[in-house]
Picture 1 (cartoon, rainbow, N blue to C red):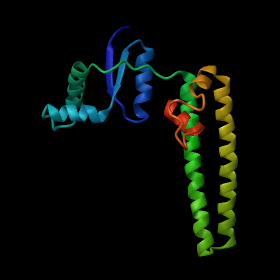
Picture 2: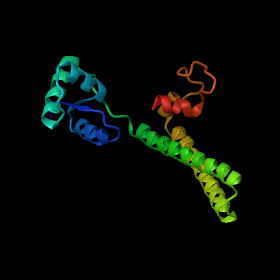
Picture 3: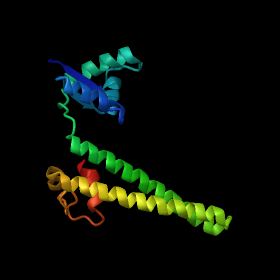
Picture 4: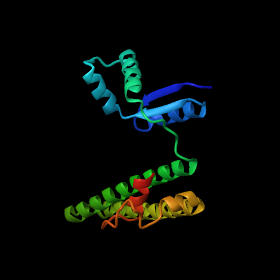
Length: 171
C-alpha cells in the first residue's frame, strides 16, 4: 500500500491513528498544530472546521514538506508510559506532602493526619516500585541503556540534570 498521510499532533490522541497508518504502509507526517494554524492565518484563513482544516493541512504539507514520522520502538513507548506514570505519581506525592504540611499548621483531627500520612507512605512505596520497573526495563533493553547513558551529552554536565532528566529528554 502506498500513500501519504498528514496530521496535526493532538497530544496522545494522534498516536494511535499515526501508528495505524504507519503500520498500514503509509508515509506519515505529524506536524505541530501551531505551525499549521500560523500557516492558515498567513493564507488569510480564519474559519476553522473539518473541511477547511483538511484543505489547509494539504496545502501546508505540499508547501512545508514535513519530515516522515516513524513511531518509537515498542520498548521506548513502554518507557514513555512508565515515565509518564512516574511523573504523575511524583506529582500526587508532592500534593499529599503539601496537604500534610498544611494539616500540621491547621491542626485537623488525627484521623485526617493519619489518612494523609498513609497516602504518602503508599505513594512512596508505589513510586519506588515503579522506579525499579523503569530501571529493570532499561536494563533489559541494551538500546535504551546506550541511549540513556549517564552522564548524558544532552545535559552538558549541567547541575541538576540527572537520570530522570535524561530519560525525559531522550524519549
